[in-house]
Image (cartoon, rainbow, N blue to C red; front, side, top):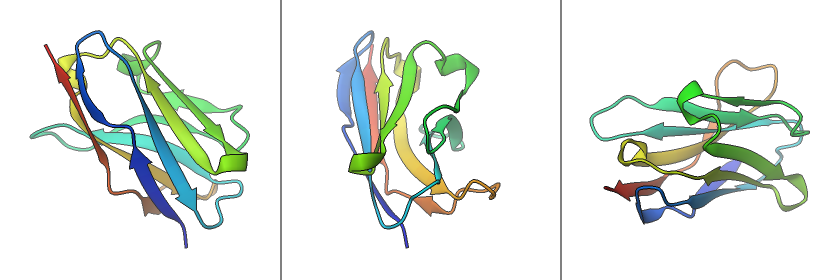
Length: 118
């Protein structure tokens, strides 16, 4: 069983930066991991994903160039560096994990709130 815990959220002014962390416990060898977010009154949306090796990354177009996903497998931790934050980035950010053969993410964290003030 995999458990995920996000941290690093908070309140930041527009144009600022935050780095989110996702600490995993349990077996995550070869798992894809990803970040999703859900803004107020919105559906959950994909943010970014990364393969076990880190060689494969995926981003939603609107976040390319501003957000960077990374992971440290030795620490069983994934990160999301968010720069040039905008008020529309305000959301609860979730990390998730899945086996590479799966289409859907099987494991989810509880989420961390990111609020960007204008």
